[in-house]
Structures are given as C-alpha cells and as structure tokens.
Length: 446
Image (cartoon, one colour):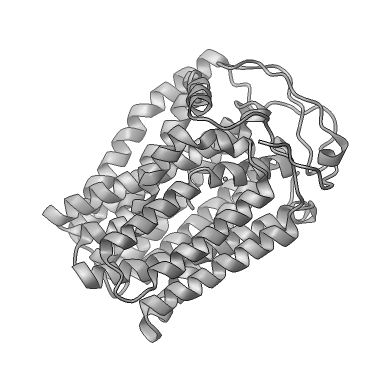
C-alpha cells in the first residue's frame, strides 16, 4: 500500500479513522478546559499538569493486568464502548462544585479503561491494512492527531474564553458520543484475534515474551521514555504561559504534523531507518532554550521545531511491527501505547514537581536534558541488537493483501520462536461480518 488514496478506499479504514479523529478532538478540548479549571482552583503547576496528563499513570495498571484483553475482545464493541464511557466521564467532570479529588478519581478511572483501548484500536488497524500498510496508516493517524490537536486546542482556547471550562467539557462529551456512533455504524463485527479468556497471568506471560527479544525491548524503551519526558515539557505550557497555552499546544501539534508527513510519506525507507535517533534528539533539544525564559514568539518556534521529532515514533513502530507475531499484534501495540501514556503521566508528575520547586522554564530544561541523556544511552544498544540480528527489515508477505486480511509471515522472529499463522477465514479476509467467539491505544497520544 503506497498512497493515501488506497488507504481511504480500504473498507473500514475511514470509519476507524473518523472515530479516532473525533475522540482526539474531544480529548484536546476537554484537556485544556480541565487544566484551566484545575489551575484556577488550585494555582498549582503540579496539579494542573496531572489533570491533563496524569490519567496516563493508570495505563501501567492496565498494561500489567488487562492488556491480554486487547486481542480477546470484539473490536467494534470495545471501541464503541470506550468512547461512550469517556463521554459519560467527561460530562460528569462538568458538574459544578465537583471536588478536585473527585475529578482526579474520574480521570484515573478513564485512564484505566483506556489501557486496553490502544491495543484494540492499533491491532484492528493492523488487521484492516495488514503489516505492509501499517506504517502509512499509522502516519495518517498521527497526522490526524496533529491536525485535530491544532483545531482542538485552538477551539478549546476560544470556547474556554467565550463560554466557560464547564460548557467546553460538555461539548467535548458530545464529540465522544459522535466518535462512538461512527465506530458502531462504520465498523463491521469481527471475531477477536485470539481465543481464550483474558487474565493477569496471560498478560504477564505475553509481556515477558515480547520483552524476551533485546531489540524489541530497546524499541519499547525508545518509544516510551524520551518521548514521555518531552511530553512532561508540554504539560507545563499552561503554567509557563497561562494566557497563551492554547497557542503553544496548537503549534506543537503543527510541528508533529509536519514530522509525521515527512516521515510517513516523503522519506525513502532506507533514509527513514537511519533517522530514528536523530529525530529523538531533535524532539528534546529546542526545549533547552527554555533555560533562557524565552518570550511566547521564541517559545512557539522552539515547540514547533521540537515536535517534528515525534516522527521518530513512526520509525520505531515500523521496526516493532516487523518483529511481532500476528496473533499478538493488539497486545504488542497496546503495550507500546500503554507504556507511552504511562511515561507521559510519570513525566507530567515529575515536570510539575520540579516546576513547583523551581519554575516551569527550569523544569522544561531539566526534562529535555533527561530525554537527550536517555536517547544517547539507548542508541548504542539498538545498533548492537540490529547488527547481531542482521538488518532484515520488515518481513515479507506472501500473496496479495486485500486491505483487511492478515498478511502471512515467513521466517523467524527473534525471541519468540517460529511463527505459526492461522488461516484467514473467508469472512475476515473480505471484511464481512462474523460472529465473535466467547470469551484498544496514543497518545499520542491518545
């Protein structure tokens, strides 16, 4: 799959894309409104950062207990149900006089619910497009996230100013409802990718299996830690420039959009494969200038340039997808999503704590320096693992992909033994409805 037009001609891609777009817009609008509410009530950079990114901390609980469900739940019902629950939770946070601790309890509950949502969504995307189309499809989702965040933060800033944070939260709840409707009406009913009942033991076993490969382990760390530390910088936009936070968020999303377009569509594969580490360094380096407490104009330029470095995640995801078995795609991609969001929550807490003791600008500089340090520490390990295993690149698919079927892989995947692919039943190959057997995230982001 080589073009965007082919993607949107693929059955089920468009409704999944539309549902995710509405959900991202709802998340950005509600996040800015909630951060503004908490900052007005507490004047605390730490609590403000946690209100916007803290729910991601719940992802670690889901990643260690619930993630085996990502391949064992019916995708359409799960995507629809999660959007509905987010609509209800967001509307509840708009209730006047709601205590701050209740708001955080709701946020953590929603974060726990979302912990397997990323695995369901990305596993379904991998099933709809097959592995050779996953990178292009994921790049479109990332670009959509950038555009939806630009629109969402800009619109959220206007709505908060013209209406109120609480009314803005209600509008965000409406967007979540629209997302649930798009998924319910546009997606076909599919059987889960794996059989058996989800369990904590199965989750731990599969996590250990995925981490048994040194290269996969390094890729996960690169996807989680450097990016998460930079999101800690972003969590301080409201504290750094309360009246211009929406502008900073919007231009950061614009920079991410540019990076994803360049990485997913413009760079040749051989060039792209060499730019993972340089893009991670680009992601953090401009934030070092915040040590000089720049004005809003310079700050906007810094965050735009830095956010182009988020294209690094596409490069690492492409390699990761090539190293995972088909029947664990939801779990493996959900582990990436859950770990990424968990690290974002941890980083938001760390950044807020440092800002509480020093200043938002100082905290941004510290988090950027930490991101650069982690990247430079992991880079040699990634090179060694690839040299040891050989530069094999993505596994080849046998036969033609029909857009929704699963590619059949050959060869051996390091650390997981020989892959045994189950035959694709006719209804799944052609995307027709099937009866689920008994018994996802980003950002991202989200």
